[in-house]
Image (cartoon, rainbow, N blue to C red; front, side, top):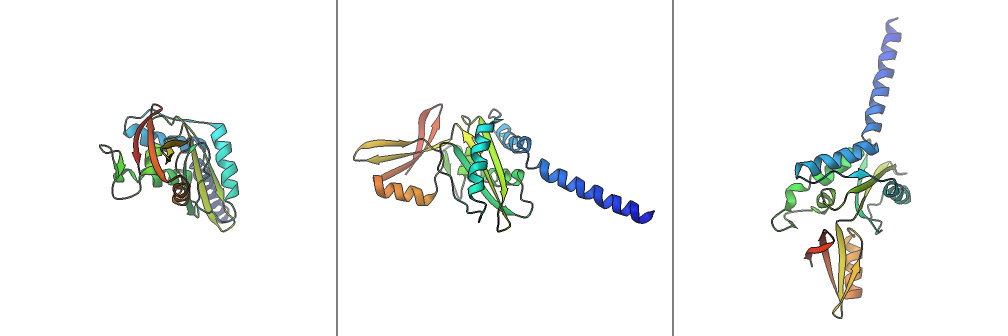
Length: 200
């Protein structure tokens, strides 16, 4: 009798841990983690979007082989993260939000470290989000959240002509390749669909 109670307790504990793990990767958990960070700075809540989630999952599935941390360069704002073990969606959002101390609100710049993931989480115009989590063949975890409208865009200046790339964040190699092609690159914030601030 004692052994069966022990076995039952182990099964119950296992099911509880599975439930907690699944809950931290549900779309409700992704949205809640974003909205907690947004509420702390007075930004309205965002909602889940199935189109964005499908886009995120399609892209995440292309990273299953090796969990390579590379942006999709698609039409949406985007944050990505890589982890191992039981790395969850909630933990990924926490990684991005933990960049908050590097963001200087007065100058609207990153100071002392990366902050662009954080600014996308709390970007006021980004009101829809869709995320995905996949387990990679190498044992890693790849997580992506896509945002609409995006909070960032690339502008390129070439021969005094302004070229606009309607996307969110790009990886440094892409920015460098575009800079070589177009001459000058500006990474820009948009607010209420108007240009707000740019970095060279």
